[in-house]
Image (cartoon, rainbow, N blue to C red):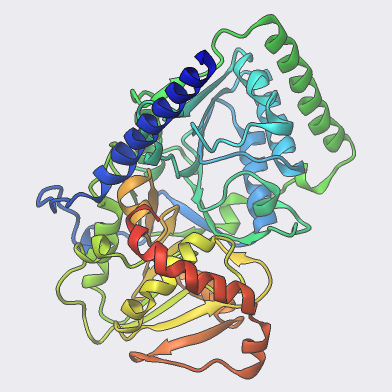
Length: 476
């Protein structure tokens, strides 16, 4: 009898908790959201420089391995500080080598701050003891943004999605890559993604560099009440585990240096490899729970509203939900040609996001844009926009409601025709391996060989799933 009563009590408590989660993590976010009139964004002219060249130079990091080399060299050259804010660090050879380099940088006196998402940080499994190795070092601080709070379900949506690293006020990287082999390995694993970063070089560490703005944002995240210091008081067992992992990571890096492994022997000349800019600006979402004001999204569409000739967009996920459309200006210039590139049925690894895209794809077609779906090996993960072959936006922002209203997100806007040309070339190289889906408000029938390549079962599943996810697009 007592066991039966206890069982009923457990079922009741579980039901109440699930109901509480549904109300506070789902229903609340489905209530009508008033459009905010404040928080003005800049006119397009604010992102354009008047000088021939500013203090910031930029390097497009299209190749994942090259992007890993750039990160490695930044860490190796650090003299004072390294600040990192990433969604996740996952297991893999590149991750362990970069962590080993960070530990040795800290050993020589560099102050290292690592901020990761509190739920999706990735320091589990093979890297679980890396948490203790990092936290126990005198010159390394590890913090999590918005850890899992079982009785505050509304915080579950507030994810740290930025991918930023700054070094000494001299170097910075921002883009779409996390730290993992799937982004940085020389030999692509099965889950490899084509991504995109931009490196910013401020040779003289001048105060009018955009890196100063990026560092200020990282400071705000680091000191925010949503951010928690973790593993500050390690147990004896955790300390021992951390020391073993620290020694292993440091030894792995030292061995690679001794063997002159290519990944730990980068030789990038920042001065000659980077391009000049007229101006570089930094954008980020506000740090808020519940719905954020979509500052990055509003800024991107406001720039597009002033574009006269062309707009090139690449995003792994495009979900044109009603919430996003509310912030689009009533009229975009009809003369501008729009080219949009995203994943296809065959390439997408995110079935939820892609199914929601399928449900709303007509809205993209109705704009008259040339819509392409990448249809070759691996998948696209880069996020970028090019306006009038002059202004370029690169960062972590996906074209969906989650990036607009829920996540922390950041982008840089680069005024450089040279960089814009390079970025358009990178997008065009992926378009060459893509299928034109729609043009001038009309769908295009794909060639027979493309039809055969598509997975019938996957396509059928995604189309069926789209009937459901279309109602959940504010979370996707």
